[in-house]
Amino acid sequence: MTAGTSSTHPSPHFARQASTVTHRPSRRVVLALIALAFSGPAFAEAPTGTFGFVAKVEAEGILDPVLKAVHIESVQPGLPAALAGMVAGDSVVEVEGARVAGAKASAMAQRMRKKPGESVLLKLLRAGGETYVVTLVATTAKK
View: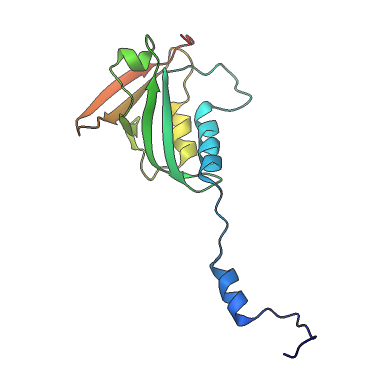
């Protein structure tokens, strides 16, 4: 190509670079979407209960992410999670008998979404490697 001319075709070098560029949403956006999935539908038919814990979710994907891990970030005193002995740092391994790792976020959110008085069975892993099982009954209390 000579000086002063232009081309409508990108150079092969540019094409190679463009083909390797992929758009990945920020980790915060993905985690926010997953948190919304775990919080329940915007227009629920009945009030959704609480178990009294906040979870940090690791996942891949955007529309219906695949879960990698769910870690307990905090537990509210006096609510079902605390009363069952859950502590920050524990990891949720199974929800209602279904493994968390590799599951779709929407499926796990559906399993966790309970009305007050309904229960959920969780298998958890402590930081030291010990596994334990708890049954939590959803409550409306937000202490």
